[in-house]
Length: 403
Image 1 (tube, rainbow, N blue to C red):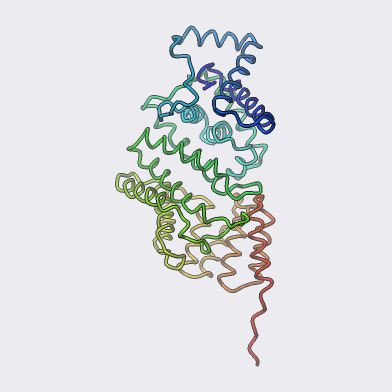
Image 2: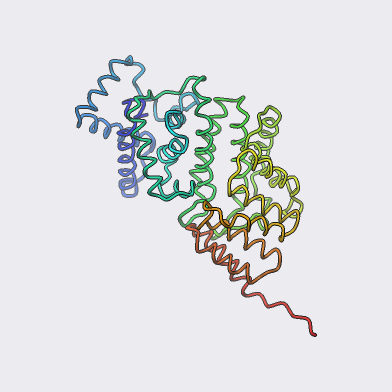
């Protein structure tokens, strides 16, 4: 709202941050206001006015906006007014940050920071690059947006196509961080996942014929449907094979399956639709053993052709083990050992540990579980991997046959 009202993205970001800081310090002491959203808008608006009036250049920009737009078009909507896809300022901001003037990686990084609220370190981990590199990308992207003078509005239909790939990638990464947090004491950041789903639903409402946006929404719903069963009473991680599937969200699964079923025949088929189809196979199976692993493996091969990445290859390796046995899966994992994007990432030793455990090689599984635990910053994942290693170490050694 502030960026739309004043036309200054960077200063609006500062004002919002100060409003959030004021809320973080005042609300615990004074209590939650009756209308938290309206409170934040009012405080942010006042701070924005102070910042604009504090510098002559910003005052000139405010005057320019005042002359350009009629008075009846320069008011913010009421705090309790229901938002539509066309009026959702967050969706507009997302489209602005994904402008084609920016390099795709810079656009995605800036949007994750401005819209998703992710830290620079979290974004760097998502892209598997050093934090300093990501900080430079975000800074350059902000400068480019500031210098461009881009209007704060929903782009015209002809302009949207150039931004959709970056927009969908941002929403996917926000959801991924919400579904499995890379840092902190909690496995999930429910607020991030819910916001990603809300924005993706708004995008799908805005573009109902875009099959890949429908596929992305389906993927999120099908994945988040398992959320209630992913953690135990103390917040501990529960693996997919051990989850109580009766706790999965049946309504979300039904909606996700319907979305991907409608999207796939329309085409063209994209990576989010394929991932949604994989998630649907998991969600519709009564157990891990009854899952259609050959179909999942075939879909991962399609996904590799559409959008190959080390993580996709790692997932395909696990599916290979479920179809052809752990030895075949381990061979596929070992082929990724020298990939620089996976160097230092916990997923590689975690997958290897799981496959060694499947193969009955307890000692190697223990070593890899411990190595994976040392590489992740997520406390629930650390505890889960450490406990897997401890459980295997506590098991009695198999009895050797006598000569």
